[in-house]
Image (tube, rainbow, N blue to C red; front, side):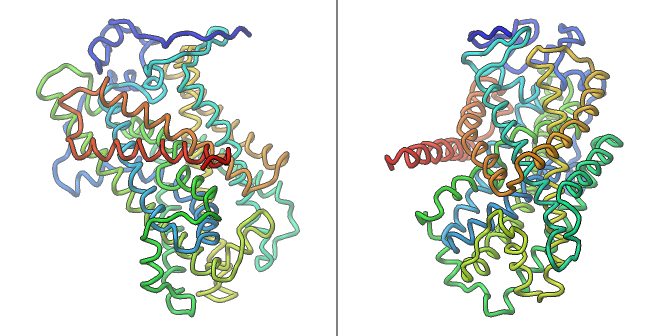
Length: 490
């Protein structure tokens, strides 16, 4: 295998044309992007105009909500509350809201351009690495590293699922965790191989509703106990500060709560499968195309903000439960007795009988939703990587076959991670920190796409641009601060 550093690959005018041209009339089928192939096979569709009709078109954001309100919230966010108390509530809210602007800009580019995320990364200037017949530019190489770390993280999630059944109150501890984890891996395979977008969306919505409801009930019931959250607690939490004991966890939270780096990459792929890009149609510079593009981008924005509301509510609830229950009792969230500690956030208000069972149901929904969405999303993104990196050019039928193959292979790989490593919290933190480290580079790429590849008539207005830069600079600054802290320089 020969590797060499190469300059960034440039598309010819036949395939790129104007900064955001689809090039669908010039490129052969095997060279078209995934999105372009879908676009030319469908008749454009005007976007709905009423709020009710627009809400019927949302869905991609709910899917990634199933990934967001998962291990990050149940394990990392609750652990942060246990370590720092209420002091970092402001950071949770900031992390959930600010990265939506990056999500929307990346979605804007994909929906209107007909390029996938990895193709967009391939257009970011910089060096590349040639491996045989394939080629990775620097940003896609970083994405590949993050993806491997995310696979380890999801192995930790799978183990966390299995460990739920080892809770003493359930009376199922005699079955090894390897057997339970294999069962969940096979369940995921069965669901994913048997269906496409609609099944993923409906399954995720059901799990999001279950764990959001169970967590809100637990948070509400806590208010009837001596551990109730007070107004002073909330004031303390909304005052910006970072306690030294929670610095590393805070960094991980920025990477994994809200839209993490992994979800930023996932989201545009689900926008493509939902149909936003094919409804817009090939770019022909007509006023009708511009109106369609703005309309479907608007629906994509609505989708992103509805999802933000859903996962912010769940994230804040988990954090407050960790702060008010675990922090005040001095309990830690670690690999030893993971679910026994976490279940205290439910038993405090619901009692020692109902609490653990409610926690078990919520934990299973939270963790399996993340696992399920990761497997479904990664199968599509990795398939696109095979095509984009040039290892093999795939037509639409070949892509579907590879997706189904990966829907089997990826869950089985995570099961091997469970067998070989078996440290759920440590594995989750590996993925969380990798995502946090990737965020500044993703923010840089999104800003470059915004100013170098987005049509002026589709670009966001000035206030949105301001928040985009706040998101980019804050993620970059936090990453630099963490590096300096690790070196003892901050």
